[in-house]
View 1: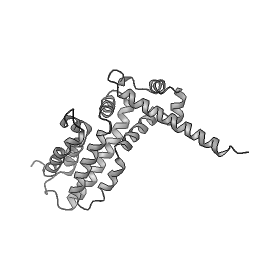
View 2: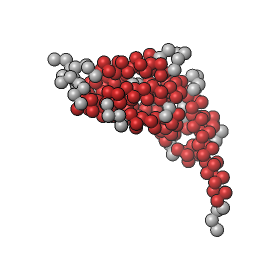
View 3: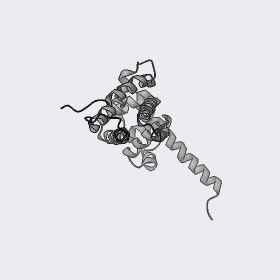
View 4: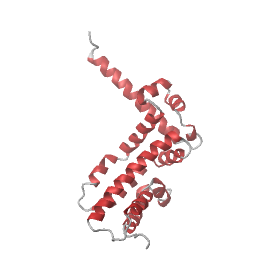
Length: 207
């Protein structure tokens, strides 16, 4: 006899609740200035009040937990809307939308973003996850720069790779965090960074 549907539903609800507890615990840990460097499966499990095996069951590994945490932040920052940016027929307008979208994403949890990226320099597991996501941002910028180039929106002497590198730096969390006042949302820096991004499109390679 197969399990009753309501038992299966209850089991799924328990799994979902445990997953939410773990992700909330991970974010809470990263929010603590004195403890975020202790980020590990064991510490997160203790904070979530679950067994370490539960964390591995839910996420498979520390890397899986970090990926899920980043996905959770992306959902909070409405990064699903980024795909719409690339549908804009005007590539320079799309670039401005790209900048704005990341400004709002980084603002989803400013403290946790800052700690995650600081931890990336100390913890190889965190570093690998953050580097992979930064690479995706770079690839998205490369697509937009190529579209701008094809539309004759770049001077002939412009080095596209150099422009992508500058745009990648401009759209980083660190740039938004540096330009936005501490008592204002990161989105406050969007107009400045959009202006800098537009200026970057005009940078030509040295003779």
